[in-house]
Length: 318
Image 1 (tube, rainbow, N blue to C red):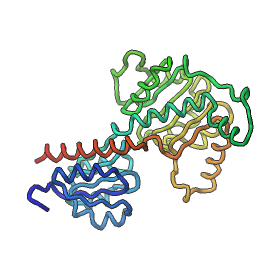
Image 2 (cartoon, rainbow, N blue to C red; image 1 turned 180 degrees about the vertical axis):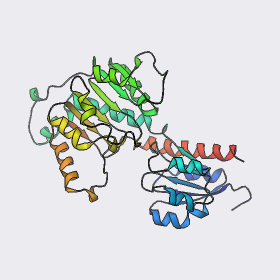
Image 3 (cartoon, rainbow, N blue to C red; image 1 turned 135 degrees about the vertical axis):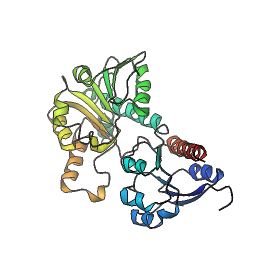
Image 4 (tube, one colour; image 1 turned 120 degrees about the vertical axis):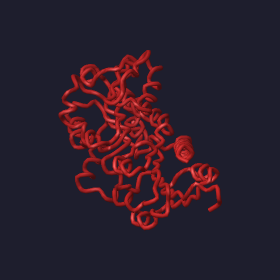
């Protein structure tokens, strides 16, 4: 380590190489372990002043306590549920993420899923691949004129709203933690107003103890009419069997999911397999394997933005 080195950083999982390049250029000594485990990280974390994770390594109290030199923990992306942010902060460790990096990709994906639902794209595509020409049966609906409720107006929620503006929809937005964000074409409102008027609801909230299984049968029952539900945030925000029940009994007109409670198919229980099969069978679903924020552009931006934040943190704390 040269005289200008700022310390050692452990980078885990697959991230764009721009992260390591920028950190190395700034004077950090980096070790990138694309394939590693919690136990392996635990054994060596005491050597590093910084740790970067993505979606597999859980940064809990044990790991934080072992990291005696840790000054920062970074996450490429938005959600911080794998990191015990409160405990890390108590220990004087700064937690950083890069939600700005993939918000456009997620917003585009959510818009595409919504259009697929309204126009029966997935169903019609599957039928035609089996030589079934069902034109009348797949008559869809226009997005224009609909009322879209956006729950969570951070980087992704606001990016989704910007995409919707050109479709001629009424946009209602609610955020528990923010206010004063209403603008031309976007009405800041309450959850009750969304329950009252929405045709479409899109979730853009973090996973917290308060939002875990938040969208359950009680939540869905508050809508005055059946809605299309989109979730590109975190799978555990939904109570999956409750959502499936609402879909099959008509309380939901359609469901678009990019995230799931369990995203490791190899560990699925019989119940989880059944939930997935029910989602696949229903004609008004669009499901994708957590790819909304995984584009080439977003992968680069998430890494580059996080690198910039880490360098700024190091420079500000000299």
